[in-house]
Image 1 (cartoon, rainbow, N blue to C red):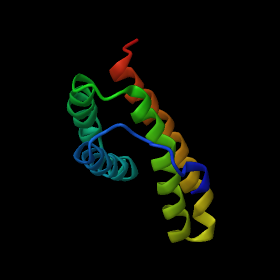
Image 2: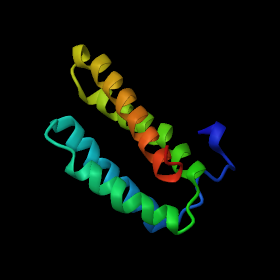
Image 3: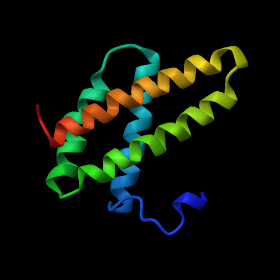
Image 4: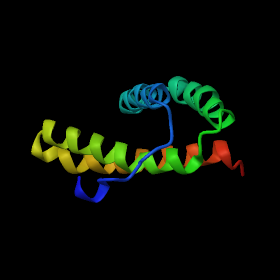
Length: 110
């Protein structure tokens, strides 16, 4: 916490942050279930283009990725049996990598 004191982490409205977090939770669940990518596609085809068009900066969203996924991995790790924790943290790291790349591609297609 000390490292973050006095720093503004994002330049987004509270409802935008809330929408992003709820959507993220939904696509993480979809990823864990391993059945399709409907929520993922919806999220990246609707939410992010809307945020981009509303002037939300890419830096703000990309900056949230490690914060959110470190938190998710920590929560998952303490709730899982010890023999599953490494796999869960690895999965969260790989998922967050793909998520960050997908976010960036909405702002910078290529």
